[in-house]
Image (cartoon, rainbow, N blue to C red; front, side, top):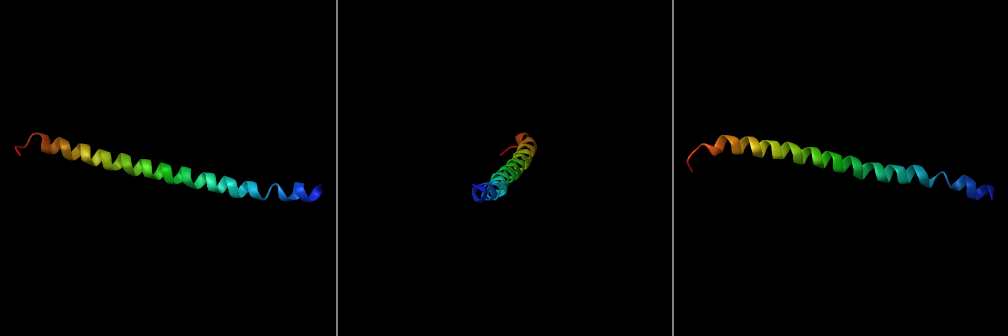
Length: 52
């Protein structure tokens, strides 16, 4: 019984690390997407008044 109790805490930090990494990557990706979208919108503002 004590062997099972000692082994249980070991996988938990690994799972927490695995869960934290994708969230961080997703947040970074979302931030990058927002920055690119802002650049595109700014470019569209400048080009909207110009004849093509």
